[in-house]
Figure (cartoon, each protein chain N blue to C red):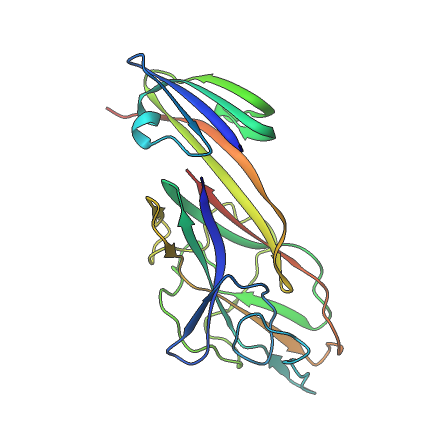
Length: 173
Length: 99
């Protein structure tokens, strides 16, 4: 018996639809989950920057446990393709949004921080609007929203981008 | 089984558990903590020590309570929501109890 912690995504208009048990975190030109990039490519703009739709991600905790906390996220390996950068809203000081706002495919006002490339050594995903928050006593609950966006400059090349790896971490007791 | 533990409390009782964490009450009363793991794991032990093993016994000082938790990591990539297996690090520490 243990906590089950999995990724969930909310997408679409401001009313938001939440999909638990997602199978990928692909960025694309639509606000949806499990995007097939070939179906929703991000088109390079000559002389400008193209933006993916934001991805509004939460960690969902369920199962049998006493406490889960110390949620962390960072990019752990891989080299970004030329012209491609990734931004998020993770923070150790400013709590993440607790409610969904319709994902945009213009420059995000939420995902404004370059993804950390090393272990932050401190929780950077808040719970219930606080970095002292936790999942408690077998509850089924969600973290606050981690918002991610991919930006594509006109120096990028068409085709698939390099594979990168993100790491999520939490403490369970 | 991922892990199995036995706690001997300061009042002499013994408690066991498998793949579930002891309650805060048990951790507060623990005098001796015995942890058995299904495979060798890196354990962050008190006093800045890190050890790798499967069978750990620790005596908890009288003025401290047991901290026992598991740090879980999993990898994702844009195309796969989970890459590989989850990784565990077991953390055993003492927390001074301020009276």
